[in-house]
Image (tube, rainbow, N blue to C red; front, side, top):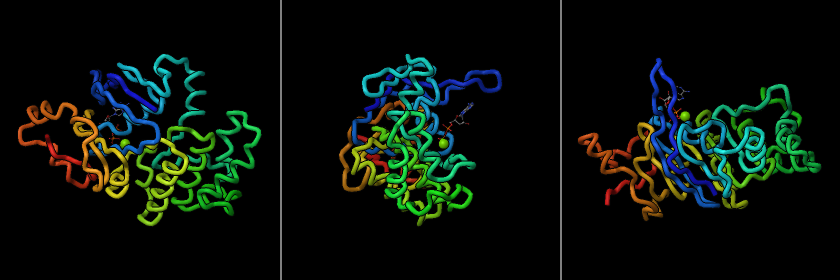
Length: 265
Ligand code: ADP
Ligand code: MG
């Protein structure tokens, strides 16, 4: 579904270049669910924003459904994003002057869909908000706003759904609804799901967990406790250990880095 080849990000910082994502290779298969975990500042949002085409990499290629998005002109990238990618933000990012229904309509109107209105109503029903279409974001709870944002992300039935700490601003009950919804979508629609999370329960439900530290993938393994098989060798694990005496991937078991299968082979 999506693959990254030597993708890195370097930004200017105090007059000097700072590499916030080291060259990264990663492949996510169609229909997979992937949780990206790691300490604050480790590059999770940077990685997700690059996968979404919201940000351009400094090096490397990002391929979505056989299209190298790093070579696309801005218009073509925007069109591809509109059709292939749904993005859910921690702080919802709904348009405050539009109702819930109108927020869900926006991406479909941009794509010129004729069935937009009926589809927006169906999507709101799917996220359990059929009676809230006429409410403005300020009239909705955080959990309801995030469900509207998920309906909006699904508007054009994208094969790829990306979510950056989607439960980070919700209490546990509302967070639980949002988690269920994201994994229901992954299962029922076959939507590939990549989410950044600090939430242990959320990470453990994913097929694959990726642990980032200092802009580098330091572990890449199966997710939930029922799936102990490592799917890929740890990237640069030896170099990581050598560079940080006393640091091994087993320190993954902290609050920041939940659900990672950490045995070093
Ligand atoms: P995370 O989502 O894991 O908390 P981010 O991807 O947001 O981490 O950021 C990784 C690091 O890069 C942080 O130290 C952050 O301050 C820095 N960073 C992110 N974007 C920029 C930028 N545009 N300019 C300078 N530094 C940035
Ligand atoms: Mg972040």
